[in-house]
Length: 203
Image 1 (cartoon, rainbow, N blue to C red):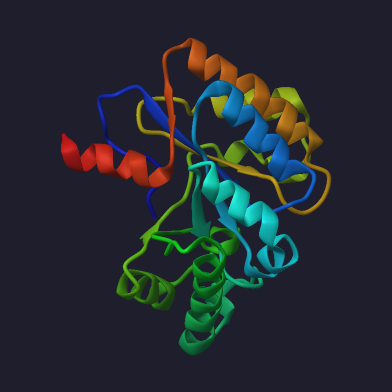
Image 2 (image 1 turned 120 degrees about the horizontal axis):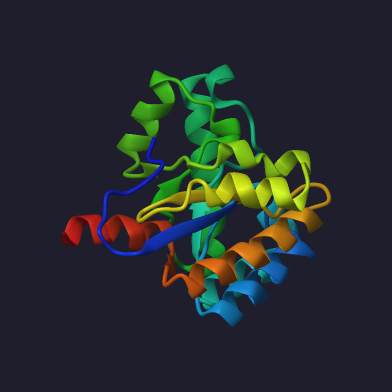
């Protein structure tokens, strides 16, 4: 599970899970457009089927779409065949809607076992975690908590996790808006996860 990338450049990858959402995903896109940065969206297949237009918009604007399974199960509770089906169903929807094949994967609940690792690696994915899990934005702990817990994790090559899907994400949006502009003013590039991984390879 990759939570950060060892690079010398001032660059981070900000990621969003569980979308697309008709309210919050467009707000995230607006923040990143104004900041001149890119994000990575780990999308759920069921949500993509409900919001195909947003999926296409995310891809058209140059952001990365990662695989977050079709129905967001705990993968360690599934058989290997069920796990593979969850990943491949999601993959197919992303390809159908964007013409692109996902190359980064995040397991729901960051839950996985040896079978999950084998399947993900056999499919050619990088499995992506994050550093700022203490932010717990999915629990709506308050904008300042999300911000302070995330700021502590900012360094060259950090991968940060937030959520644009399920429930009220207004705290997340407020926190991300502040954080993105702080990072830009400090000279950080906002890259997709794949762009961040590619920087490591170019060292």
